[in-house]
Length: 129
Ligand SMILES: [Zn+2]
Image (cartoon, rainbow, N blue to C red; front, side, top):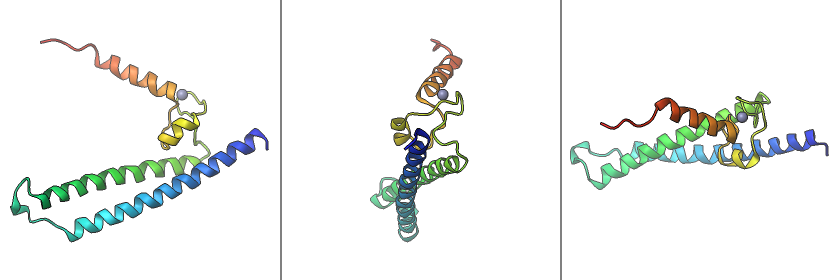
Protein backbone atom coordinates (compact mmCIF):
# COMPACT_ATOMS: atom_id res chain seq x y z
CA UNK A 1 0.00 0.00 0.00
CA UNK A 2 1.38 3.45 -0.85
CA UNK A 3 1.59 6.02 1.90
CA UNK A 4 -1.27 7.97 0.33
CA UNK A 5 -3.44 4.85 0.40
CA UNK A 6 -2.59 4.01 3.99
CA UNK A 7 -3.37 7.60 4.90
CA UNK A 8 -6.78 7.30 3.25
CA UNK A 9 -7.34 4.00 5.00
CA UNK A 10 -6.58 5.63 8.35
CA UNK A 11 -9.01 8.45 7.65
CA UNK A 12 -11.64 5.94 6.61
CA UNK A 13 -11.20 4.10 9.91
CA UNK A 14 -11.25 7.37 11.79
CA UNK A 15 -14.51 8.30 10.10
CA UNK A 16 -16.02 4.94 11.14
CA UNK A 17 -14.86 5.54 14.71
CA UNK A 18 -16.33 9.05 14.77
CA UNK A 19 -19.62 7.85 13.28
CA UNK A 20 -19.83 5.09 15.91
CA UNK A 21 -19.15 7.57 18.69
CA UNK A 22 -21.68 9.98 17.20
CA UNK A 23 -24.31 7.24 17.30
CA UNK A 24 -23.53 6.45 20.97
CA UNK A 25 -23.57 10.10 21.95
CA UNK A 26 -26.85 10.71 20.15
CA UNK A 27 -28.44 7.72 21.90
CA UNK A 28 -27.29 9.07 25.27
CA UNK A 29 -28.61 12.46 24.31
CA UNK A 30 -32.03 11.06 23.38
CA UNK A 31 -32.06 9.18 26.68
CA UNK A 32 -31.23 12.25 28.71
CA UNK A 33 -33.82 14.30 26.87
CA UNK A 34 -36.46 11.71 27.61
CA UNK A 35 -35.53 11.79 31.28
CA UNK A 36 -35.69 15.57 31.32
CA UNK A 37 -39.11 15.40 29.73
CA UNK A 38 -40.51 12.67 31.99
CA UNK A 39 -39.08 13.83 35.29
CA UNK A 40 -39.84 17.49 35.34
CA UNK A 41 -39.19 18.45 38.93
CA UNK A 42 -41.50 20.45 41.07
CA UNK A 43 -39.57 23.69 41.19
CA UNK A 44 -41.35 24.59 44.40
CA UNK A 45 -39.20 21.99 46.16
CA UNK A 46 -36.36 24.41 46.44
CA UNK A 47 -32.66 23.91 46.08
CA UNK A 48 -31.01 20.83 47.43
CA UNK A 49 -33.91 18.46 46.79
CA UNK A 50 -32.69 15.22 45.17
CA UNK A 51 -35.21 15.54 42.37
CA UNK A 52 -34.00 19.00 41.43
CA UNK A 53 -30.41 17.89 41.76
CA UNK A 54 -30.95 15.03 39.34
CA UNK A 55 -32.66 17.36 36.88
CA UNK A 56 -29.73 19.75 36.99
CA UNK A 57 -27.28 16.89 36.53
CA UNK A 58 -29.21 15.79 33.47
CA UNK A 59 -29.23 19.32 32.06
CA UNK A 60 -25.46 19.52 32.45
CA UNK A 61 -25.09 16.10 30.85
CA UNK A 62 -27.26 17.16 27.93
CA UNK A 63 -25.10 20.25 27.34
CA UNK A 64 -21.96 18.13 27.38
CA UNK A 65 -23.41 15.62 24.94
CA UNK A 66 -24.62 18.37 22.60
CA UNK A 67 -21.14 19.89 22.63
CA UNK A 68 -19.67 16.50 21.79
CA UNK A 69 -22.09 16.02 18.87
CA UNK A 70 -21.08 19.42 17.46
CA UNK A 71 -17.37 18.60 17.72
CA UNK A 72 -17.84 15.24 16.04
CA UNK A 73 -19.84 16.91 13.28
CA UNK A 74 -16.98 19.36 12.69
CA UNK A 75 -14.59 16.43 12.40
CA UNK A 76 -16.87 14.70 9.88
CA UNK A 77 -17.19 17.91 7.85
CA UNK A 78 -13.42 18.22 7.73
CA UNK A 79 -13.08 14.63 6.55
CA UNK A 80 -15.64 15.42 3.86
CA UNK A 81 -13.61 18.45 2.75
CA UNK A 82 -10.41 16.42 2.75
CA UNK A 83 -8.88 18.64 5.44
CA UNK A 84 -9.12 16.22 8.30
CA UNK A 85 -5.95 15.84 10.36
CA UNK A 86 -4.27 18.88 8.80
CA UNK A 87 -3.39 21.81 11.02
CA UNK A 88 -5.23 24.98 9.88
CA UNK A 89 -2.37 27.13 11.17
CA UNK A 90 0.77 25.50 9.78
CA UNK A 91 -0.60 22.96 7.29
CA UNK A 92 1.29 20.09 8.90
CA UNK A 93 -0.40 16.79 9.67
CA UNK A 94 -1.79 16.45 13.21
CA UNK A 95 -0.56 13.38 15.09
CA UNK A 96 -2.86 10.35 15.25
CA UNK A 97 -2.58 10.27 19.06
CA UNK A 98 -3.80 13.85 19.28
CA UNK A 99 -6.70 13.16 16.90
CA UNK A 100 -7.73 10.10 18.90
CA UNK A 101 -8.21 12.31 21.98
CA UNK A 102 -9.48 15.42 20.17
CA UNK A 103 -11.11 14.28 16.93
CA UNK A 104 -12.37 17.78 16.14
CA UNK A 105 -9.11 19.62 16.68
CA UNK A 106 -7.94 21.84 13.83
CA UNK A 107 -4.50 22.52 15.29
CA UNK A 108 -1.39 20.40 15.69
CA UNK A 109 0.03 20.08 19.20
CA UNK A 110 2.77 22.62 18.48
CA UNK A 111 0.38 25.31 17.21
CA UNK A 112 -2.11 24.65 20.01
CA UNK A 113 0.72 25.16 22.50
CA UNK A 114 1.91 28.32 20.79
CA UNK A 115 -1.57 29.80 20.68
CA UNK A 116 -2.08 29.00 24.36
CA UNK A 117 1.21 30.75 25.15
CA UNK A 118 0.18 33.79 23.11
CA UNK A 119 -3.13 33.98 24.91
CA UNK A 120 -1.34 33.84 28.23
CA UNK A 121 1.01 36.67 27.17
CA UNK A 122 -1.84 38.84 25.89
CA UNK A 123 -3.49 38.62 29.27
CA UNK A 124 -0.23 39.99 30.65
CA UNK A 125 1.38 39.42 34.01
CA UNK A 126 -0.90 39.26 36.99
CA UNK A 127 -1.20 42.62 38.62
CA UNK A 128 -1.09 42.84 42.36
CA UNK A 129 -3.46 45.15 44.06
ZN1 LIG B 1 0.27 23.53 13.32
